[in-house]
Length: 229
Image 1 (cartoon, one colour):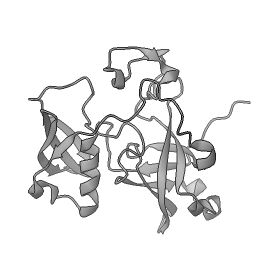
Image 2: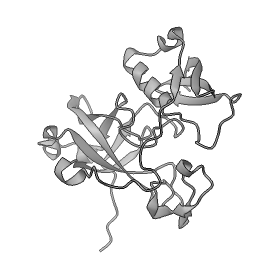
Image 3: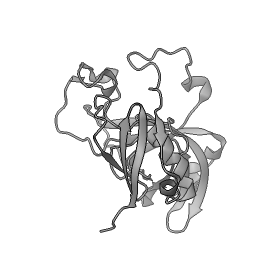
Image 4: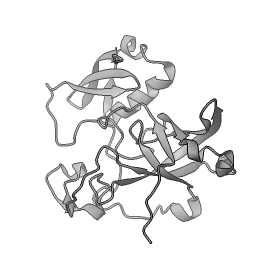
């Protein structure tokens, strides 16, 4: 019997839009996010024992990529955006069911007024407000396979050098500085773009970040607080 999945929680992260989000979970461990359960699921008993696990799986929806149609092949950025491979051989958001899977580190469980118990996690690759369908514990003896093959994406792309003037970096709250530098070091640009004159912009934690990449160095040009509507 078919069963409609329910949104049990939403994540609150520093990414209000897709651009700039790390391409996989765990690549930027300095990132912090909060998982807030929907009122129906704010039951402390549902989290009993979760503190014993260092990492958890999140099953979630690519809410910004939901489509009515699907294609059997996609163009992964890892292959330059030109070569097509089967959708089920990728982690592309454009799938028959727009479902994502991420392993994140569980930092703590905190009780917050009006929200019940929330999960503080690190290393998440989810956009702010992303619906979460389920939370499951990561089991190292069953889930870790060091000998596994990585196909056309065998290892993370090398990080890029980041240059950010200290006077700009100091504008950020201390807890966001290393996280932003870690995100930028992943080179947020589409992998097939390499225009040294182009200025890129991304939103991060309430800030608009402008940067340029030239000769393998990403230089932050400006940091400005996001205007609240």
